[in-house]
Image (spheres, rainbow, N blue to C red):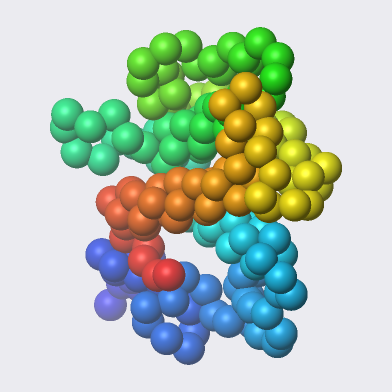
Length: 189
């Protein structure tokens, strides 16, 4: 009898619970222990976990798999989400800046999704752009620990910036769940 080498239609690497992405001891988001102290630390902790979730949903895939579209006519893909969130981070930085806005990374419209093609250079650039944009936007709360402080031309409250970032990543992590399942059937939180 031949050995089965393919993954089942829906699968997980978790050894404990079938609805988990990874076993708790292997999950970098594992939050055992004390919760963060204070509002800023709590918001930053949630943001970090959602960023890790997005990375985890993309791990182990080829550029072609990352660029796989969901269902027509949608242009959404995991790689498109990475590019979109890099663009969103730059937009958030523009919200709190007093200077001229940073230019769009991928042009107007849906360039972040439309340009998400299955090439290694495109995937590498997307991850690098996301890391740069995250670092730049992360620096703002570090310089402005008063969450009620207003920043930029539009006087955006630091708290609003942080909550909006958490919300955007959380929403797109939900998309990433479905996109990853479509690519190779892997499921989990």
